[in-house]
Image (cartoon, rainbow, N blue to C red; front, side, top):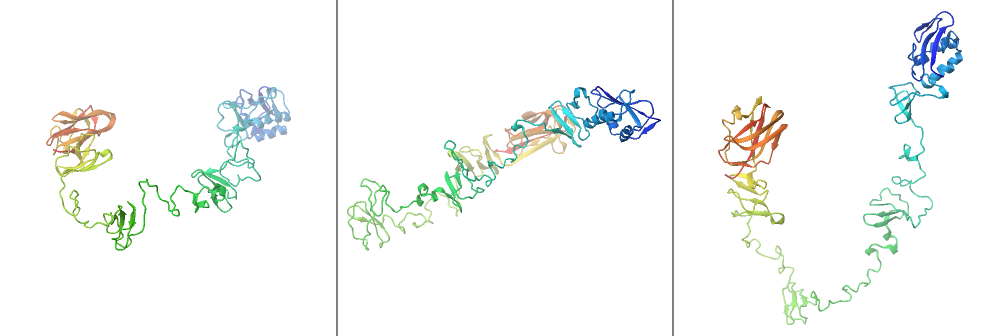
Length: 507
């Protein structure tokens, strides 16, 4: 069946179709023509959707008040109207081509912006069927034969299987589990037994201490604590009082070290109470005296020598056994309680004996034994050694600023109260070093900041296509009394501001 056309006329007289807003006479009126090339029927008076939605038109045709035709000449029956026109519209919301008994769905690379609920659309790009659910187009799942293409693969849909992680109660085996020698038994491993099922006989391998743990019905214990044949701790062994180690000295055996052992020492009886009686002893034998000042004696084959060591009064403890600790016996040290003048440098060394910290009095800057971070007081200023510039510089830094209103072209910038630095520059009260220079403008500009003395460049900073830039590696010395100037080298630089930073140094 090719294109389907809908003509209507009255059976007698004229008839108004309220839904469509038309009056039909007794002559044929083409309302819609629809086919594969014109699915909306726009060649007629109304679209197929408007006709389908017209309840009055449907009722008048069924009642026979209005007649309908596909060719504008032959009247069709009301039943044919239902079968050939209305039914096809209900399926697709459009008149469809039923050639060879096939439905032709609307298709393309992008779905219409909206549709009627239940309306379908075939997407040619990803070969998917879409349906309008009343709010939006949704893709109809056409089915798959590959398990991996299914959605929801992460869901727990198989409660008959054990989980890899998480639900330990779920993973408990009921009945026996046969693990072959090829696969072995897979045990839980980790460092924390919290959360493991507390079922008597459960086991777990601790990866921290390389130990096997067993739940004994009340608590987790190492297997060595419950299985005697697998004892892992020395103190868990029985028979610790047996003399199983003949290689060690034993008090009960009264073992003596070999005679040629250089560390051989034998303690014997104490000397007499008066301390003056020799007791037969071998050379180098040591004796204790429990009644004569608790002295320790040694024997030289002829006599006992007193006072080798005594824990009280004859010992080696500087703070306990020595007297005169408050005497000034160490002139090489400085006494904290007195005011002494220290000559030379105090050097605190760091790794590899490199000087790390130096404090000097208010004098000339040190020239030896200096390192980055060394501190000195120079000309009344606290200074630190700058290794990158190889000199002592003051900790305090001072910044000098010059600027110009409006556009500036190849001109000196102005200092305080608008005085050009070409007339009166910034006079330096003491010797110092330019350590940084910077410049900025209102817009993105290309120009050069020049720090000058007597019109001669001392330091420069090139700014290229930017609203400002800076340099902190400057190392330009100047003398006390020098007047430094700030120059803008550029064309029509908008509201330029520039300056330089100085640190003071030894004059």
